[in-house]
Amino acid sequence: MKNAKWILLVTALAWVLAVGVSFAEEPKAAEPAKTTAQSLKDKLKAKMEAAKEAWKKESAEIKEKLGPKIEEANKKIEELKEKAKSAEGQAKKDYEKTIADLKKKADEAKAKLKEMDSTPHTKWDKVKEKFHSTMESLHKSLDDATNKHK
Image 1 (cartoon, helix red, strand yellow):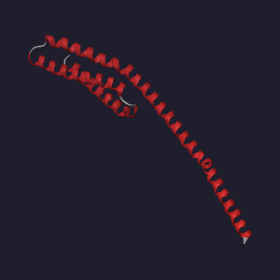
Image 2: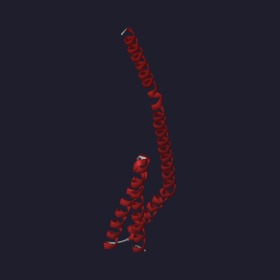
Image 3: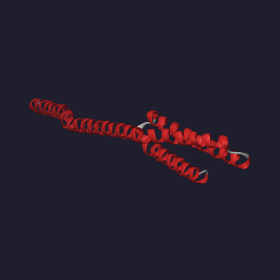
Image 4: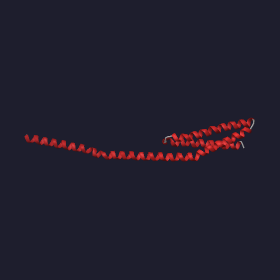
């Protein structure tokens, strides 16, 4: 019976040590998951930074290309204002209405261009689409007005 107690004690001790060792080894098995999660996080961060840089570059290109077009539109509006000074009656009223509409569209385009600076890159496509739509509307109206008031 004395031997049986020792055998039972040694077996229990061996079991405790075996279980203890297996628990101690589990964090090592989980470490690759931590490494993979960190790796994915780093890759995602790098892609977000790359997207941000692409957004900044595209924004700068649009401003460089279309900013002067807004100024050109404002010059044409000023030319129409000069023509309106010599107009009389209904023609003058038509000029004034056309000029007010064009000025509103030019101001809207300028505001959309400024909005690009504060727009998060996550909403970039939507803002860019609205800006291009505004510019198309401005140029169409400007062409129509120029042809109408020759």
